[in-house]
Image (cartoon, rainbow, N blue to C red; front, side):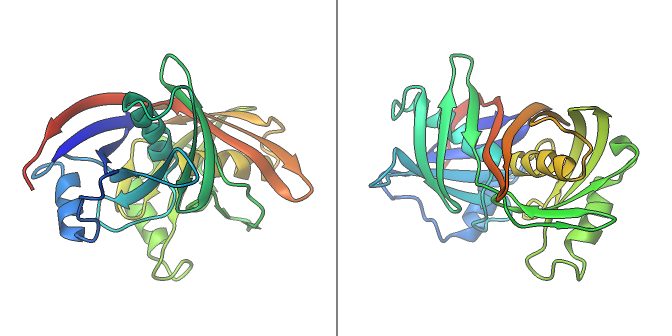
Length: 258
């Protein structure tokens, strides 16, 4: 089987062109094996690019544990770059994902701007904010993200009674200036810290606006693997025209025997 490897600010993915529908999609153990960094290719997740009757392509996303999961922002951006590589699109894309329709553009430097879902339901508490940006996110401010044991503290929150069996991604955030924040994320399904999380960066930007930490609607998010930009419009209904912007980089391609 031929595969491609892409990364977006360090969030890395195995990409497979599945327009022929030959990939064994229900083989959880195989997907987990392909994502294994010692015995397989190694990635935070695996993404299938498939045909879709009404859009340019369809995105099917699996976490590294082998299970199909909710929306992945960096994965969506990398899939746009992959679709361009395959000649499916030029500089604009419309694709279907598990959370609905997404619009995206890609420039000559492979920077991808991906429109995320509108966000309306936001839970605010004294200690954290919870919102869904295509995936569920727990967002909390900390004095310094570098002092946090992300895997330990993230797992405690992810598996707590707060979120039940489904769990939540967990984001630790430190403000750097008025429209600039540092972020570290524990991702469910990976069950560890990742170098970047697109839906987490999106959730963090909106959460900081909700808290009044910033009045800007264009926010820079430093993740461990680089920097992402999030922009949005605040309306009476919530947050609309939400865009996640950042690099989508081809790493290598190869073949693996199944």
